[in-house]
Image (cartoon, rainbow, N blue to C red; front, side, top):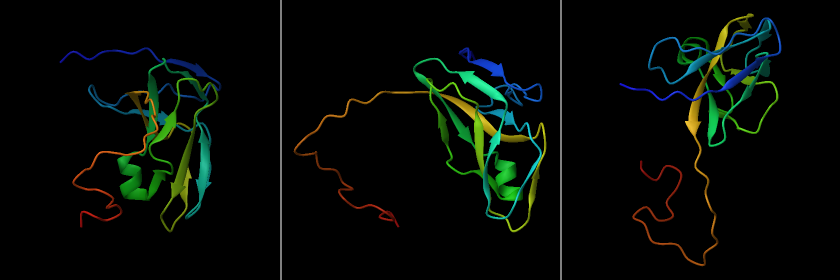
Length: 146
């Protein structure tokens, strides 16, 4: 299978920063790491620095997602998952983590704390209308499918 490559420029702000990398060929998420040691108390949230700035090509975004092992085994997840890094952002990438467990979680320098997924962005033209077409679902919302 041929995979397209998109160049995403990375700038290290710290010698402790690791360039995101894929664990296996074909993975959609590249692991990103912490550059600090810290403790995340039960039900606490923190922005964890990565020591990286990124330049994403126009027409793409980076989605920040939880690592499944941390979520299942430790109760640690990306709070605004998926978080979005827009192509125009040039600040340091920080990962907003939350601890949903009842015990402290220790984050260490170099620890893989989240995944970055490159996704195309489609721009919508929002057009005001006096009426919308009918659909089978209609106005049924929260929990409407059972």
